[in-house]
Structures are given as C-alpha cells and as structure tokens.
Image (cartoon, rainbow, N blue to C red):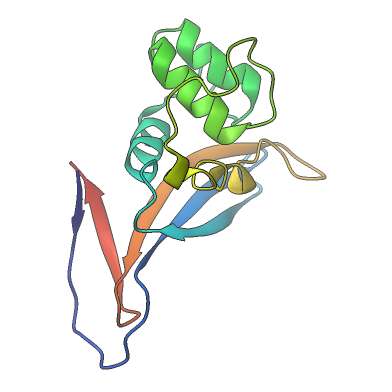
Amino acid sequence: MIEIIKKKVSKKKRRPYYKLVFNYMIGDANGDTTEEMITSVDNPYVERFVKLLNSLKPNKGRWGLILDTENITKCFTEGQINEDDWKFLMYMMFPYYDLGIMKTPFEIEEKDIGEYDVFSDCVRGDTEYSILFFGGIDLFYYDEYGVKHKTKIK
C-alpha cells in the first residue's frame, strides 16, 4: 500500500500523478544518473513494479544489479522473485521481449492498456559508453496543487 506524506497546500489545482525516479550508478562509480517518468495515480502497476524492483539484490558473484533480461532472469533462478513476479517484471520492463509465454503473462484489464508499458522507457542497462548499475526507484506523488510528496510502500 502506498502512503502519501502530505505537505502544505497550494491554491492552483492540477491533475495528481506519480513521478518515478530510476537511480543508476555509471560503470565503476564514475558517476550517477537518473531516468524519470510520470504516470497516472490510477496506474494499477506502480506499487508492484516499484516494490519488486527495489527488493532485488545483485546477482551472485556481482556487486551491482544491471537491469537487463539476463540479470532479471538470474534474480528469478536465484530465488529472489517467483515466476509470476519474473513474468511481470519482464513484461513491464521489456514489453517486446519474447518470453516464450502468452503475450501478456497476467490479466490486463482493457481500461489499463497503455499503463503497463510506460516503465520500459526508464529501464537502462547501459549508456553509449558504460554499463549502468541500478540503485533503486524513488516514488513521488504530486497532488492536485502540484505539491511534491514523498511516498513509502507498506
């Protein structure tokens, strides 16, 4: 469950949304970079996606986690996530990757089509010059007044 941490209220109304900030370390600690995305507060996949990705640890023999199909699959084979979670992450992060399973490994309601593939835009395993190690996702809620709030998933 996502808990919203409220701040002062402004007077100008807007449509509320979530902002996800994907944190990455460049190569062997040459620097840091982020990728950001915005999604509707009605997106039914935000909580599960953030919770699962933030729970992953580096694969055995590695000191960092790279977000690519090979390493996410290793998280499954090492027992960090179950098969359903693996299928969910693979589908959300790499929607055009052939898993050898049905097109959608879980039920997507018609009203939610378009909400599941927004995550893949921020998933990075490398840049044009170096690999990227995943450092977690920060989730923020922007209310109807445009005020940014920290969140915590229970």
